[in-house]
Image 1 (tube, rainbow, N blue to C red):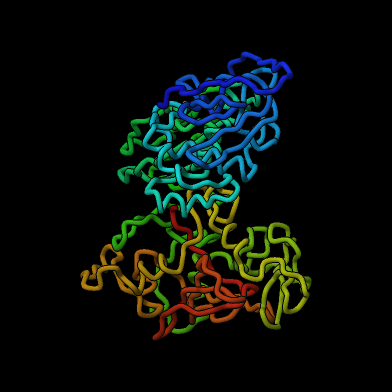
Image 2 (image 1 turned 60 degrees about the horizontal axis):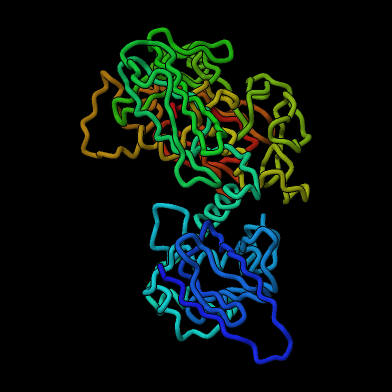
Length: 489
């Protein structure tokens, strides 16, 4: 800290000069080591941020950089840096204000508190600048003089804390979390890693987070384990989120929209999936190759086919194989009626689009991708599950992470090359066909299987498909109806 070095001189005027003897304080919280000039008095703010004031204009400097001036000392004897730039004291966004705050805070030698102390060494860095702060480029200055600028967000937090401390503003905002309320589902014997929860505050640098509930989850015992995180700031504001860990008995399954599914663990990746397509009432028990023709296979195995969803659409009834049809494209992805919406023209979408309607409801598919990515049970998959990515589908079927891994048909560790191996894979995919966007007819039942991924591509979306002698991904119109298999998030 710099000590005061001021002196005062007499006036040569015949007129008597009246001096006011006051002590002011420079605040961001308290700022020591800044030069002040008041009439003929020059000195440095002391360890309490205080300075002598005898009336009239007062100026503040860092080296030869002029920070600002006041025509007179405020009635409360406090000089906030907001006063120096002539903005309201509750201001934390003015450009010049932030520049002064950033410079002072970046040079602070006492980082353990909000008080700012400018050392003699730091002050002397700026002895040859001779500029107003408005004309100083801080990035250039910090580079030339070899000091590090404080992060903008932290500068603002510091300003706000000071204003709260001096009762200029009130802190009513609770801390926020990096995550939200959520449910995570697994099966007995398959432990999950608890999510890393962090909290931040718009004013406080450090936020206290307490954890209550089942912090020691027994993943070997079926049950529901809530874990609650509560964050509090120094003003007493608090907020909480709860993560629920559901440990399911895989033999009892999970019920969703009236159907009980079991959960299968991949022998290839270790990920967990529903044991059948959405809407299917049974797991496929036979391969297409066990039947003489498509019709015989469909008659015997159709209960394992499941529903056929238009891409990104909710389970509103359209997905049923015999649902009614409409040619009126939807204007809302979450409210499209219960009919299968036909579209026989490019881009073959079930919502209004720029090409056909000059109305971009979701041309790039981002909204529907997010909708199908939900895991809270409000989308088409059960709570804790979502529609898989194309990469996840392929890593279980055609693109194994370890290509040299040995196959084992007894546990479903089978690489998919056609419709027969799609059934022999642990996912036991049916050859369920799809529903055409143009005619709404059921096509390729018994011949090919087509499973949606969550990946939009251009004006269409990607599927994973297989048939007699082929396998791969392709681009389908979003109004086509395809199968969906859900993966645990």
